[in-house]
Length: 159
Image (cartoon, rainbow, N blue to C red):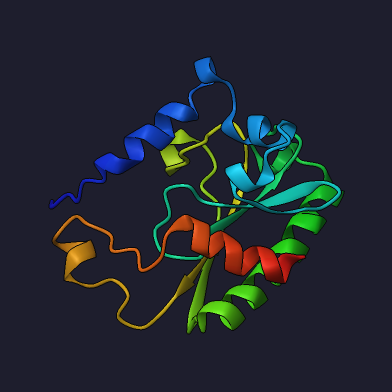
């Protein structure tokens, strides 16, 4: 079996470790939305850019309440999460002219969650041919814009 390594994710996973506290809870409590790339705050969830994205526009919808499974989450928070996911899909299609969108959750460390203790919905724009040689064989992601530019574009449409 071949393996592709993503050592750049180590920093993100380390930030999410319990001894450092929950990165999402910290972001939600701080009054530093621009520095944390928080795009939108709703009643029960917030929308934030992924600091280590798989592609430009990779964002997440995160409940304020720290829960590790869907079954422990509040129904109203889940309803709002799906509504925000719907809005995010629309914005990503509009701003990035995405041909498709990946939407999903990794619940628990063994399922691949980088922040295993706090559920969150990933929303990623996709295009035909976006997984090229650099990504699949070169172990490198090519990001066409800095996070600050992604934030500027998406913040404007979430307001």
